[in-house]
Image (cartoon, rainbow over all chains, first blue to last red):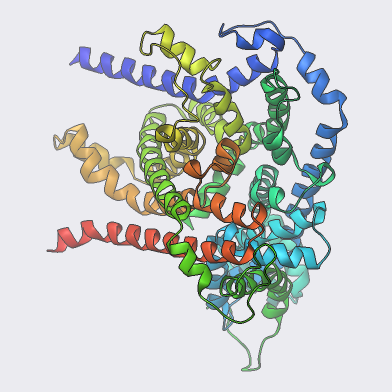
Length: 275
Length: 299
């Protein structure tokens, strides 16, 4: 009996170690590769000394900075816009009862299930007609397609969890609707808002399909497009060192968000599925 | 439901709150979607030929005979099935492992496990592409060093392993999501149920089959649906790994390349509607699969 318990404990430890290794090794290898250039790239030795040549090259040119600026602008505006539009709507859907409420919720669910390519042809025409093609604004506009339904859906769940007595009591005290939203509910729902905002930032930061489809030149590219399209500068040169350096720099913000706000992000992700 | 209306008068306030969001959503969803449907039923101009005006089914007729389209269908379905099944099993296993750790350690481990999920899939695709490189890739080098391979395998360019490569990368990225949701499901099970089963002499396997699985099922089945819908629309990995190579294309990559590379918005729209149909079928099939255990039990 004792032996099997010990074996079980060891087995669990080994399994966990394997999972962590499988999780972290690719990221570690990206780091190792980003320190290598020239012929050292062909080395399969597991260790290397930090050499910042690739980082110097990547950070020295204007591309990465421009792409970062576009990515920040994109993720920031989409998140802000969808929260601005989504919070009032989610309040109404989560705290008020009105005919048509279920219909609106159903429509939102349908919208969030629609894949991006289902609207791609039409959106391409619409964006060209609005003169937004090859501008960052096109990505911001397009990203609202998935960010807005997701935001409203998630926040509605958080608003619904608040006790309705709160609203009723404030109403009896003569508190107006706007004041109720801003001074009572927002304060109570802010963890939910933070979780929704973080998830939106990460989705927009990583978004590739729209960003690739609606931009043509470097000027409007976001980081994923830049990294996805980087190719070898010369015929006999492998660009993997610089690609990995740029990749790691682009991955740093979402990774920091996960490490710092793990609980919020986890609660947002589970709320999306459980509610 | 929540507030009792004081009068029968139409209450405009909820609509005023919902309206701005709905109007924006209409512009970014309803208008492009309607236009996509319209485009699907109209011919594209070809080369120097003007497009035929009026409604037509040509796009769909061509689509049904398009080899590349059917390859994309099978690639996508194979990818979705492989990814979702492997990620669900591994996610549940990881969640059960995590449950054995103290709350603090669990938090740290969960943060580490979630990292690949935060990595942009474009980055993941490029990173694994490099690791799987036939000549200089670390994975081939390790397999050769371990004596499992004689020489490097061209994982990325071999048609047989293209889908497997995508599944492996998606597994790395999406298993954390399934582990997280499985953990949420596991934590909703009261522990005294397990204690009682243990006292009654139920084996670990029995406890897993008749307690854990049925009680996790409600949360897990929704998580699987999310994952399935996500996998069926996979674009990033296929696009970055294989570009416009027909043998590695997923449905989303097929549609996007029709619109952008071949400048055929109508044909792209028709294939997008076809993709929607495939996704709806797969989701319906999944719904039926969920019902089967219930039917077996009741019969």
